[in-house]
Length: 301
Image 1 (tube, rainbow, N blue to C red):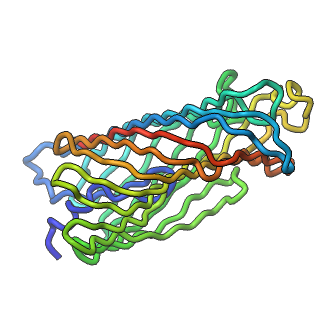
Image 2 (cartoon, one colour):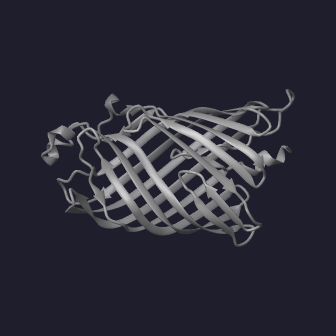
Image 3 (cartoon, helix red, strand yellow):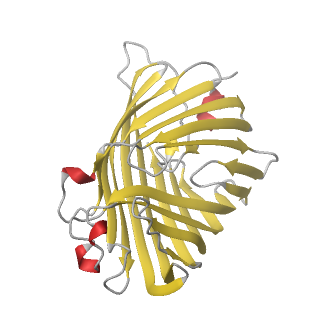
């Protein structure tokens, strides 16, 4: 297999933590300086107001604004190994009436620590730990500390077909181990089926720089709410409770390669599923389908 194949897979992604499995570059001689690669990902999303349901009863209209910012730097240690060190911030802000089960905000501030390793001609591996604070950060405490682990493998058959396998481990979640699998298949000159979580999509190349797609996006995480969250809502059992938040949206979008190392995306569609699952307390409000808009920027240096 030619080395150029690995470079065609530079932006392959896997899992809800945006687990990318990029190609490892060719070897750097001892006389050359260490190669260093950088990734910057930013996104902003808006969700319209919709009635929240609990026990099939209409409770409260809830809108949403979400944002995510992630930066990772990857120094190359040798021809097969890259380190990954960085940071990420994500925030969900919910607009609603007071005294309902949904939190006003959910946030995470975490480090990114991991590595990429080329196992062989056709196999790549990534392992990442995301230690940080997840939940109500108005009063940070160790109750909100978590360190999810993400591992993934890519099997590169050729430039048009790659398989992906991985898992996410989070002892705090209702589902502490979550395995996934996916595939990227470019089955014609202009069509690509990219079934990789968290953003599986069907892509059509309009030009060399402009792509249209229909995709599904998944936003999910495990958080701990504030120490008085339940008291303020007449549900003291929800004080510093753990919840799994899940949001699934779908719709058409466009991706524009503004520069060789910069891609801009915009997507409009509907949030098909959204729930705040306090699984320990068996309280799980959800919302009806509602319109959404997502924009994103991806830079690689």
